Structure formats: C-alpha cells, structure tokens
Length: 218
Image (cartoon, rainbow, N blue to C red; front, side, top):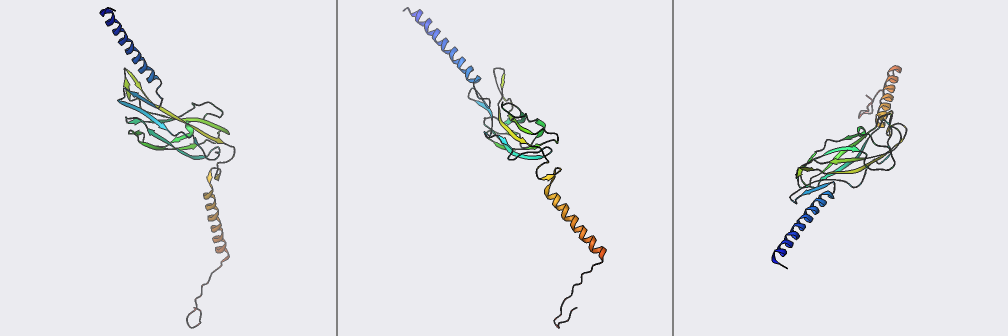
C-alpha cells in the first residue's frame, strides 16, 4: 500500500477513536445516578438519604401532631452542598398523597461540607378535617446545582418514601387534642380544691398534741 494511503487510513482511525471516546463520555454523563454527578473526574456533587422509608410507628388521628423519624442526609460529593427538603409524590402505588403543609421540616443545618451527615427532624401535623386512610408520598432532598460543564449546570437529588395511616377518632394521648397528663393534673387539683372548701365550710379543726418527758400532753 502506498505511504500516503497508509497515512490517510491512520488519520481516519484516530478520528474515529476520538468520536467514540466523546460519545462514551456523553453517555456516561447521561447515565450518572441522579444523586451524584461528576465532571472530568475533578469534582462531584451528590446527596444521599436513608434507604428505609420515613414511617409513623402507630396510627394517626385527625387534629393530632406526631414526631416522625428524623431524615438522614449525607453529602456524597466533593463540593459543599446547600440542600433543600420538600414533600412530593414521586412513587406510584396505593394511598393518598400527603399534602406538603402537613409535614413540618426542622431547621437542621442545610449547608453540608463533603461527607458531612445530618439528621433533619420531621413532624406530622394533621388538620381536624384530614380524611382517614393510608397516605404515601416522598421526601425529596435536592442539592445545589454547583457543577458546570459546557454551559450545562448539573445538580443532584435523592428521595425516600413517606408513609403513615390515618384513622378516625380523637388524637391519641388525649381528649379533644389535650394530653392525658394535663387532664389528670386538672382532676387532682379540682379534688384538692373541693376537699379544702369542704374542710373550711364544716369548721373542722385539727389539733396536734405532743407528749412531754413527764407524760403530760402540751
């Protein structure tokens, strides 16, 4: 084969390899997990959450307020993350969608350095008009879109299910939403007040006598 033809074939082979390599880079970026994105191996952003669902241990009642298990979040990237936490329905399946206003999200730190972990408090606050049934949504943690490449800014997000069951009746632990210990304290105070008033009205007097060394009462 002439020398010029060989050189031409070599140039075509190099160009083909370059195209394949560039396509492979694009495909790898497109298939990167949503919770992590890496650009050129130099920097990465990512957030992770617990695998187990956030699930209320018992049943809930309309008008009640319940502590949910705290949400575990970790910064899995190499960049500082400013995370946000929201409630959205992502997964399919039975159950009513949880209104975002029913979930109070604690004010734990939202600025995470690389590999930092945090527990974010969660609380379920139900209105008195809440309909009974099973509820299901997702708690979504979104990181800051901090990595840019080729004019495209990449972000990361992760989610875990949120589940609980709502049954009719007054809120657990009290009547009309009042804690049980408050009712018992009120009852005890009322009884003590009634005894004091009865003693005062009957004129009952209590006399305390002490016996001296000589056997006489003082």
